[in-house]
View 1: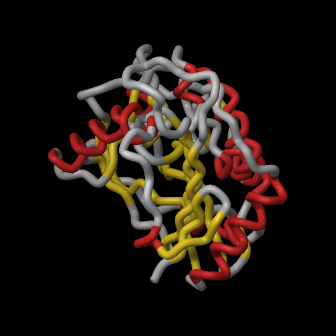
View 2: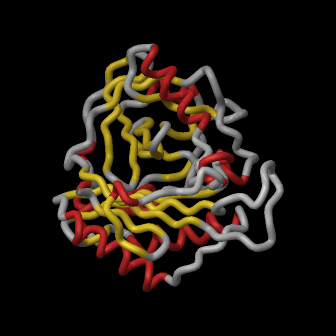
View 3: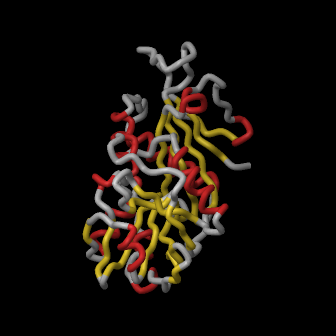
Length: 268
């Protein structure tokens, strides 16, 4: 039975219960982090905990455990579940509501849940389209944190699947290409690697920051015209990198193996 960690205790998955009034469930009032575990070692854990606290600050959420306790919980979860490679998710919500509606009580009991699932070693190559059903709001503070509100991403992913693709590239309100539904975008334009800047409404990805220095990429806005002329592209997130082998029907060559990025994910 898979083990989870809930509010300070390790439990069998079947024994972990959340309140039906939890605001994460009713209002998406919370944040999350997803990180990679290699054996019993979490990858980039300090960076994930830092971003968790930064996101909590944006939503005025309380994190009632210090980093040492959270690190112990993550490593304990990896040890208990014994997957060769794991996707660890940390979910923080404001907790059960005192009464219905958007009203926020002064005294709340946050919910902090950690789960663990096996994940693949190699990223599946992606065929992407440009999402037309929704746009990313670069003016919203939520664009730069891992909010539980993933409605726009779900709409874009659903559109991609309906159109015969595997993922979608999302545009912002200025029609700049921003990201995929579950990761940051890197594109090679005229032989130079480019990734969209934070002020275009991207999540400042932890893998993105590591890769930026590794392949000497620069931050710059990408237009739809740029996407039509890129000679290679990939998606990055904290679990891995994924070649983009097709954009709107135009074939692209795999490129990840050409760049020194895979080894980054083996370094705790």
